[in-house]
Every structure is written in structure tokens, then in C-alpha cells.
Length: 555
Image (cartoon, rainbow, N blue to C red; front, top):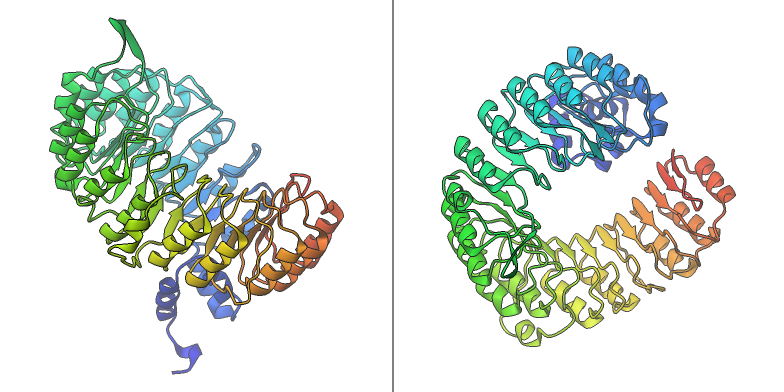
């Protein structure tokens, strides 16, 4: 069958299989038919300040947009929501995060035209008032997800949340974290009025009491996800002791039989509380976050994991009593684990990495930043050596004792790595990195921030590498020359604060890496703004250039 007679629906299926992103961009340049098909497959658009004049054309080009992200805008743009509301798009999600305030008039117009908007994200808003909550509920009565977390100036109170909850019957997920004026009344009204509520987050809402949380849970025992923290304040008595966990709160968690995710970051908890979590969640629990929690013991963590062996995402950051022996005992319960974060667990050595890779068959992501990596593990690496092809992402930042020898052992057992972050690992050399690239041919993202890296002697193609972050390193033009010849598929290169780099090295990278879209030259003292202007003129394919003088230009 000739290519032109191949049904467009089949081409769409093929393109979807290839995935979105840069693949679609390449396909769009093949012919007009492919351009038309890929335009229909573009569902998300992130808007930057210089993008705004192009919006009418972009909205016409991408008629199937469902997601618009305004969180990257640096200033308020009058009439922007008017443009979006008049675009004819049928949006599903709108992100207004990081703006000075919520544009009330724009929301009213948007609400009258976007009847199918289901997700509204307004995180880190400069100013949040009760009136904003009422307008949101009035304009988008069918909202299913709302994020109003961590406003810089929150005047939102129980009054606003009560009005909002009474109007959003379909709300399934809400994040009210950082709104410090709200009390138990807000939590109670959400759980009472929002009959479809499944997920709720309320970090640093310290006027919400343990009794209030318990009452809300009993109202909504079908919650699948809950995220909050119990303040680590101390009370006076015979010495100073941590605030105890209320028995009503402990008992209420036993009723959460559909619980799949719980985040208790920065909380004071107890083993009794963890036992209640285990009784409630059981085999349904998939996500457990106990970052920087205190007052629990290894016994409590071990018990909850033994009863919840379907956990896929586990975060135990800063649980400083954990040792290699503890991880070995826990690993027998982690057969379903796909992601683990042990950063800040200062007693963990190389042995923990080997244990996890060996005993967790589905593990795809390991985070062990600021640990004791670089020490020990010789016996574990020799005994029961098992290659784990599932591990794709490894974050080892700020492990100052990590050496080439340890790193090479890690990549030998995880040869399918696609992302490796070695930020601040001064003990890793250029020779070690070359060995990593030899053994991990699928690597796409490599971060060597603040490593003191200077030279690379690469004599082979690193064709899959797309993101290379060398900011704060000591590389010179010679290293950039090697990178330009061996890493020709780069999409993003970050050489911020690489003081020895000159226009000669940068030009060589830009000319040889023809797919390069983003380049960070911030604080590159030997690169002038005139040279950047030349880049903008001669290389229009470069979409983002962060200039030496710290101004972001989007081409």
C-alpha cells in the first residue's frame, strides 16, 4: 500500500506508540500529512512570556490541547485567560501556579466557556482569599481536582473552604497545604460535602487537630490517599517530650480499608500509629512516605512493610537509625517495590545498594543522596552477584566518598540505566564517567553538577544521551569538543558557571549537536552577550538559551 493511502488513524496509532515529545517534532517535518497528524496529537502546552504573541497561531495549530500550563510566566499578562477562553479549546487541566494572584475576571470568562475543565492547579499563588475559593467553585462546579497549596499570603479561612466544599460535589482530590488559618471545620466540611473525595493533602495546617483528623476520617473512610504532618512541637512536663499521638487518630486509621497512599513527612509518629496504618491499608497500600519522621522505631517500619507487601513507592529519607542490616531485613518485604528514597540515611553504605538491586526485582528508581556510599559492600558485591535490568534511574548526589571503583560496581549490576545523578560527587573522575557510558549504552540523562569534572576521553559514540548537566564543573573547550563529537544527540546542555568555557567550545557543540534545543550559559564569564546574539540568529532551532548575564531567552 502506498504511503499516501495508509489511513491516518493507523498513522496516529503508530505515532502514539513512538511516544510524544521530540519524536513528534521530527515526524512533523516529514510531510504535510504528518504535520497535520502530529498537531492533533499535541495535548499539552507550557506557555512562557515570549510565547504569548504566538498563542493565536498555536491554538489554531494544536486544536486538541487539553492541558495549558501558565506556571512558568514571570509576570501578570492582562487578557491571557480571555485569549484562552476564546480559543475554542476544550481544556481538561489549567495550571495557574506561581502567579501573583488569581485573576477573577479571567476565571469567570473561562468558566463560562470551558465546561469540561476538571483539574485546576493554583499552587504558590502570591495572595489567596476566601473570595478566590468562592469564584473557583462558582465558575467550575464540575471540578474533580483542586490544588491551592502553599500561597505566599494566605487569608483563606474556614468560610471559604466551607463555601467551596458545598459547591464541588464531584471533587475527588484537593490539596490545601500551607493555608495556616483553616481549622478542623474545613477538613470536616470537605469530607462531609464532597461525596466523591478520595485524596486530600493538608501539610503545615497546624490549626487542624488530631481529633479533627480522626473525625474527618470517620466521615470519609473510603479515602485512598491522605497526606499531612503532625507537628513536632514539644510540651513541658518532666523534661521536654514530643506531643503524643492521640488514640482517636490511631484508631481512625484502622478504618481506612481503601488506603493506597499515605505521606506523613516531617511528622512525629509512633509504632502504634504505624500498626494502625498497616491494619487499614494492608495489601492495598502502594505508597508510603515517612520522610524525616521521628519517634518511631525499626520495629514499627518493619511491621507496616511486612503487612503491606504491595508497597511500590517507599520514602524513608532522614530515618537515621537505618543500617545496611535493617535494609537487608526490610528487603524481604519489598518484592513489589519500584521506587525507594533513602537519602540522608547516613549509616547506609554500598551494601544497601547491592541488597536492593539483588532483592527487589521490579525496582526502577534508587535515591541514595547524602549517605555513606563509597564505603564497604565488598562482600555483598562478590556474593550473589545479580544483574538488575529494571533499574533505570539512580540518584547518588552529595556522596563525597563515592569513588570510581564503587560507581563502576553499581553500573555493572544496573546496566540499563537511563538517568544517573552524581551531583557533588567529587570522588568521581572523568575516567569513571567514561566507564559508566561504556557500560550503560541506554543512558539519556547524566548530571555531573559541582563535581570538579574537567576532561573526558571518549572514543565511542554516546548516541542516546539527551540531557547533560555540567554546571559548576571545571570543563574547558577541549571537553566540549569531545562532547560535541561523541554526544551528537544532545537536547539539553547545562554549563552554568563553567568559567573556563569560551565561545569556541560552545560554537563547536552547537554546530555538531544539531538536535540541541536548550543551552544554559549562565555565569559563563568568557562567553559574551554578543556571541549569544549570534547563536540566536544562526541557530533558530535552539529554543531556550540562558545567557551569561542571567536573562532567559526563548527563541
